[in-house]
Length: 185
Image 1 (cartoon, rainbow, N blue to C red):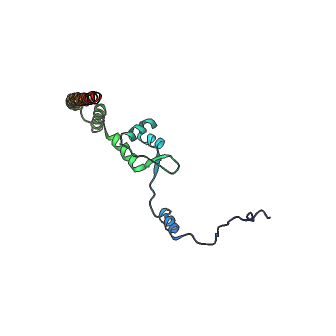
Image 2 (cartoon, rainbow, N blue to C red):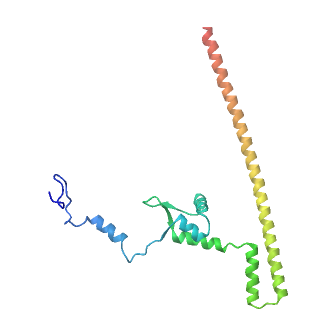
Image 3 (cartoon, rainbow, N blue to C red):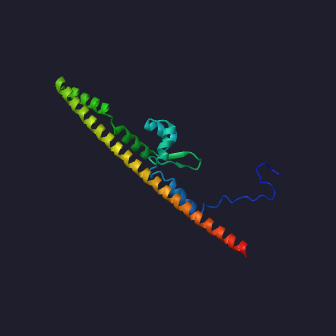
């Protein structure tokens, strides 16, 4: 037996045949060089793009803010465009100090007088304080509403527990009566 010949009784596929039509179609659609490819990124790459840790990317996935799916190797990947859009949105969320710094830089570049810069900065600070107070009020209102909701749930639960106790007592009372009746016979 020569090294290139198959072992006796082995089934050797005929390599001279062309691939099946469905296989040609699959190869044609998925390996078309003209077709734009979607770039997929791993959790680690997404963390670098967003500027957070990998564990935080997992939290974002659990909160349904990012969508990852396992590829055929079991690696979790997401669409690059989705990650980039999330990172861009995250970068546009500016804190009050960032707003002030941006406004001061803009006014310095425009060579505005110092007193005008101070007034604008104070206005921004007042606006930020106003919005922070409104946000605090809304959070407090939400906390009160949540407390009321929990209280209603507890009241409903205690009512259901009481009703269940009454029903159990009624069933056990009927059972005792039936036993007495059966024992009396």
